[in-house]
Length: 251
Image (cartoon, rainbow, N blue to C red; front, top):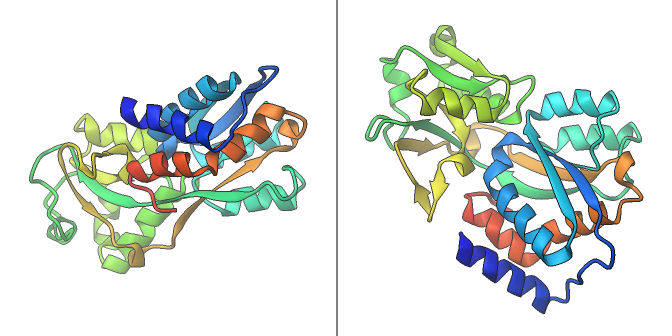
């Protein structure tokens, strides 16, 4: 990851990304699935520009409620495209600032090696006690998991075994700690070096759920914040896109 960071900075400098004359702070609300790439991107952004990033990670639905209640965020990186679009219609964001920064992938994962098969047939065998997913009303990855189980024909039989996390971060913790034998998480949480780094998993086919398009937007509070504008521009640069892809996302 250090090599990616050095390459990222060098690439951005070659593209003419300028250092900030006066450093500012940008408060960013970040969907929990994007935690790992955001930490890399934020660190490199700070080194490259001098600005400071204060990132808060959580569920998209909860962030929406907090933003509606005046939370001090400048930029919102959601886990869907509907919530930023809603904020745009409600004049809660800067017009024209919304864009898709990543398309997420869902994976059925277990911390146990060789537990989840390559086709997800374990769902039909239904031999486990608990399966984790994020709360669909709060987390788009939870909604995608619900859609996938319904299309796969296992939703009704598995529903009594659901363990729901309020975010995909909490859902991952349920599975990683063994409180649920398996669960639906974001591929980015378990992906490294082009493969699932531990345990076992089934990357859920994209045709089993609606696309997980993740949009970013500058919120009304950040309209005059130069760091917010620079950060969203930075997020769309080719070197940063390479980092995002390295965590298993599509663009």
